[in-house]
Image (cartoon, rainbow, N blue to C red; front, side, top):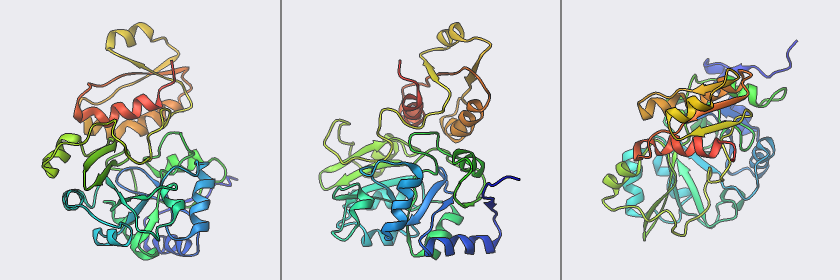
Length: 308
């Protein structure tokens, strides 16, 4: 008989059970529109420590605080610049994380020891119900071991943690499918720290000003390590189709991407999970165009690839 923890389904008692687990200081994998997150009460030091332990995550790696309402930002941010207000009004609830100056009382455990805090309001009804019901603020890094493929459905969470997964609130496949865009905002301007669904062009139209250069001084943010989001099977990136076809053997699997960047992003992790489980010797992938619309997919593939 399997010892796996069964996924909680969509029935109301299971949502209430998940809320009870979080209120008691436990951890629950919850659905969001981006990826499944390993959720815990952001103000409970023991619960946050359990998230770090389950993920085997470095303690200096900041966490994103997930809120039920945009108005709750004031509980965490010392100040909200006008550009941040514009971003929040346009993108929340949704796949955008704002990194802002933190209030003094924000736990350093959550900020990775920095004086900034990462905040977002997710666009998934179960996530928002879970956040509101459990106290109003949850940390929720991707529900997988640190550095491995992110989960875009409940089954990925169960597979990723082997015989001891956390309870999973099953909200179906993630609509966006990759992690949120992370943007640092202060009075001097704004800067993208991690590409995602919200592109630089779209954010510039909202802000009315261009972003600061990528090399500017900025806080650490999730997803910035050179190696991240990686399958166990070696992933080899090819500059063009001809190179991929020259490398391909019967023992390799090929990652086929949609020609639409949002559709490609939505399917990326699910496809990589499937190819990772196929028994292939390698996964070959052609890098998509180096354009703003494809920045998020290129970023995830580049970090997931096996170093040359």
